[in-house]
Length: 174
Image (cartoon, rainbow, N blue to C red; front, top):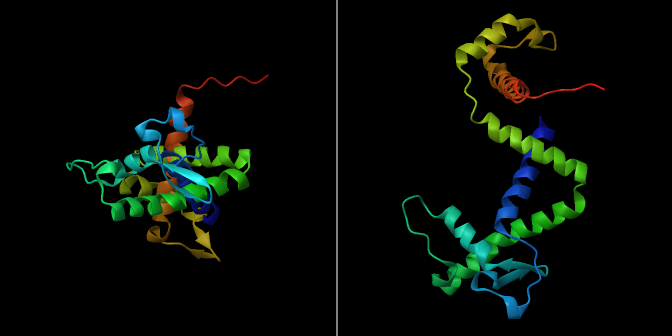
């Protein structure tokens, strides 16, 4: 469980910071307004376009998003400081996480994202518990429904997702 949580957090950090900051080297002669470097962290550029994306994400629904250029200097500094940790996490992850681990993180993230849309009722979970009670034992003690409810729900969602993915898949053994 700890490994799933850890990999999920790293995946979220990887995927969310990709949308928030990027390491670029810009040519001053070809810069557009959005390509302007607004700060750096450990020599990695933080771009105005990333700040504007960040502002869109944090602006409450129904309110107009202020452009980075329209913010006061202190607000601009705060935005750059908010983007900096994501840039560092992304850079460290890209250096320290293997390609195989990245692929697994992306797969885990995709599964969690899609599992969030799958509905499972308490009745379905209770039925599974009742049919498989013998499986829910720890130290020779029967675990209660409340102790395993969320675990069963997660497993059932995974089963539904896999079944849905495999429904249209064509598997060929050679």
